[in-house]
Length: 144
Image 1: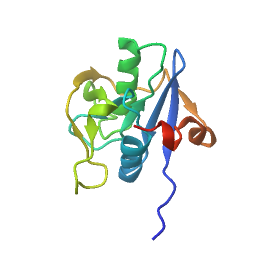
Image 2: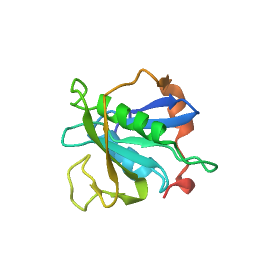
Image 3: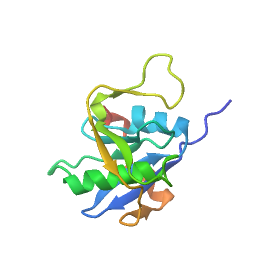
């Protein structure tokens, strides 16, 4: 069976921060294990199924607390907690996110991180056209 092309959804946050997220368990696996770079930020809604979300790191600056909260709000929105009020979202550097050997598709373990409480929201984000997503993912040599 031929593997289908991953469906990665992209958003731009204020300050030109790029956020990528998976549309399925297989896409989440691809995003967290193939696309993620060590200094990227990884997000996932706590205790509910949802997208793995990456806030791409920038060489010259760190994201503000507001930027981290916006990425977390995107993770909450793209989860089963979309219609909830305040939701807990895990946040960690991608270097601390690993797929355990033999784990189900979309399952990862997070060694270090924090939890942010946010409301599911995408009003501040601009969707990146799907045709541009492949241009925004790193080449094989840039991956962790």
